[in-house]
Image (cartoon, rainbow, N blue to C red):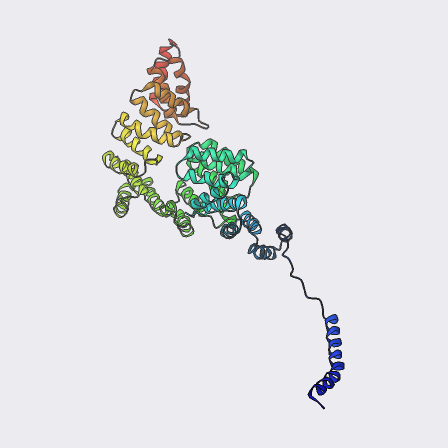
Length: 477
């Protein structure tokens, strides 16, 4: 049989087997399950909705696990994750969430993530807040959160008017409590204590859990002599948001104001440990050490305070708090020349330091008997903090003694009209100035206030007598 014949026979014999194999393969294909199509991830809104439901049910661990997993691929989920973390006072996790979201988003959403990031970093004392505020504006120049973040940035730069304008823009755009808090911060930077307090209180009323307005309000209260009112507010805020360096900073300064510098040192140390590259926080421990020395002054241990502060100054010659503290200790020792040396150096290092300007003016006026020289620094102190009655009164007293009576009347009138004003020296000086100007009728009311507040002030009684004499009121004279 030829070769081709054998091949034909083999093919015919193999055909039934091949057909059977084909049937088996077809049967297996029918019986095999269909291949699973890729499962699309749930939409962002569904993930957020489910997570928020778990949060409401008290299952925070599962809720945040869901959000963190989804946030790896969806920046919108990361943005919401940051907002939820922040609302719970978890500032560092919120910061991380906003960073991740900003990396994945673009346009207005990226601007919001970066703006929120900058505001949280500002509360934590992180220097990168400024750069992220800039990046937020670059991503969305007219966005709400970039505007809020830039308001904080401008306030820190000393551009208070710009900060106020930006915050007002955010308020007008419906920015709610966050915009009101930014406005409070900007007004505080401008020295408008009353306006700042009002804005902060509105922000707190709208969002009682918010951290930033509470810290801001505590700062305003401390500067207006109400540190005792600020302390419990700060304690509550710190308990709710233990990661806020700004809250610990303000608590340290509140305790210093209350005469508890030793306690304040612990809060200052925590703030320094939390903050990153923040020069204000870094100098806080030095402030507290100065305050501790000034407690010796309050106890009459002036020489000890001068010794300790002189040593601190020699170790830190460019520290404004140390120079200011040493100047105050020298004032307590009635050493005007030594005090002025330290205080002049303090204002050279920081011309915007209202407290240093005030004590420099005080030393020149009270210790050196040079009221005309005192007017300049006292004007700067009063301008920096327009709501500070002590600074305004000191300026009015210096103007009176410098015989600048018209200006004295203006300054002292505004000072004595401040809410809760109770300084008899301010009323007495205003009355004296009116008498010097022969405006006897106007002199009577402030002088009566002075004698009511200080019944043993013989000078105020004598001046009141001269006012009645000028009015030809012999009975009251």
